[in-house]
Amino acid sequence: MQPKTSFRFGAKEIRDILKSKAHCLQAGFPPDHVLIKTFNEIRDGYISEVGLPTYLSQMLGPLATVEMRYCALYNEDGRRLEFHLNGRHNQSVQRFIADYLGAGELPFKVEVCREANPDRVEVRYL
Image (tube, rainbow, N blue to C red; front, side):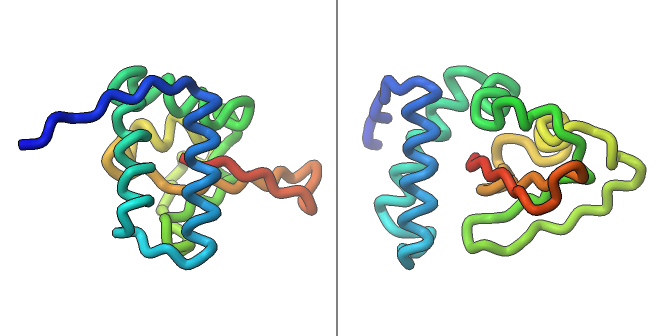
């Protein structure tokens, strides 16, 4: 058994790693590529260190409290994840992800489009 590598990154570095992962996926790297797997390992280690609620808060920033009705969640291959919100439209995206998806099923990308400015889409990577 190979020992786990300990990475010492903060939230800013993890956000940079997630953006790099997004660029690699857009460039055509498959999700099982060693580089993507390494990015995932670093992210998972960071989540283990800080906990899922802190991780989500750090990665989503001020968008963490946006209601799910304004959010679209996507997996690594770009497919939009469909959910039956069943009255949870007002629930914050951070709470929804923590309560219903958990660390093992994190969406890769969160897009937020608010009613006040429908032409502006904000993106965060998880």
